[in-house]
Length: 412
Image 1 (tube, helix red, strand yellow):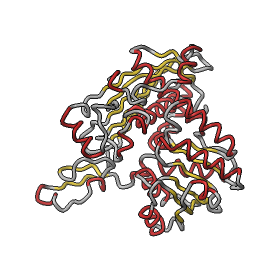
Image 2 (cartoon, rainbow, N blue to C red; image 1 turned 90 degrees about the vertical axis):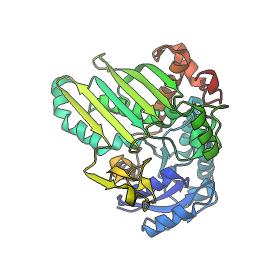
Image 3 (cartoon, rainbow, N blue to C red; image 1 turned 135 degrees about the vertical axis):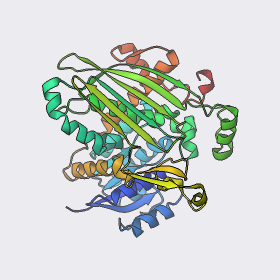
Image 4 (spheres, rainbow, N blue to C red; image 1 turned 45 degrees about the vertical axis):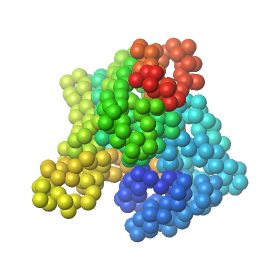
């Protein structure tokens, strides 16, 4: 298989995690990188790992002429600018075989529509990177239960949770740049996982029709004066002036268009999980069967006592977002594979080589933005949002949450 030349946009946490994943994927070369600040360290890592030449370019537009696939791993607030540069590059003669966008596709539906318009200008197949759907535990669960589902019927309830102690970078905490708080950052993962788990194995990802969304958001930890001051000192983000939610929970109801059956997906996300580190919880209930997954269950445990703790330099060697470097530590030996990053790249590679979009394309990403916006609207209204109501859908098309506008103090 000939190599696809990746050009990576962004020099932060997600780009670094993707490089770790690509070490396990054949047929992809990291040919180029670009970022707001020159990604020298990331480029050096890619070269040292034998992933490719990792040439640094000054812009997305310049880089696009030297790669086959552009990976948009940069900040949410830069999404449209990066897509506009891609479109300009294509109009200038660049030939792309694919475009990848890390979740979320955009911060709201007006921005998401612009991303779709630009993607159509670019004309290349697309991949919306939602890693959790590609987790082997979920893929294997659906495969294992395929026969049971055929005999007994699909899952009727799915529950998905993602929690950790908070993001790495300042812009993630700023609702005007990121697009909100934890619901925008992590709720999009859980919304996708719930929808996917409930979908019958032989149906496409958007088969089930969203009917309604109810949600609640709150600022529970990071709005307290002590932690608000810590956030201001560490990241320069003032939650006294422009707060965002650090907790969100809700429920989405879907309709099976073949049977008219209603099924439900529950989600819970938070930036207050001061335990081992990142935790993903998933379970599903069907008639006569069930599944359950917890990423903190590891075949490897490490204990570090007080006397030895001083020698541990990096708590996150054990687990993403880990908050401790001593005691009994849950260790995941291959987090990129565990969380689905490896397999989403395999899926994108196979799709682009075949000249088609991936399992999850930009249109799917657009629908996840719609569900996320519906959850924010439900929380603002204190009411269930009816996704079958034309007036509600029209309102969502232009809706920008108060929290995203920097007016979170009015609703939190």
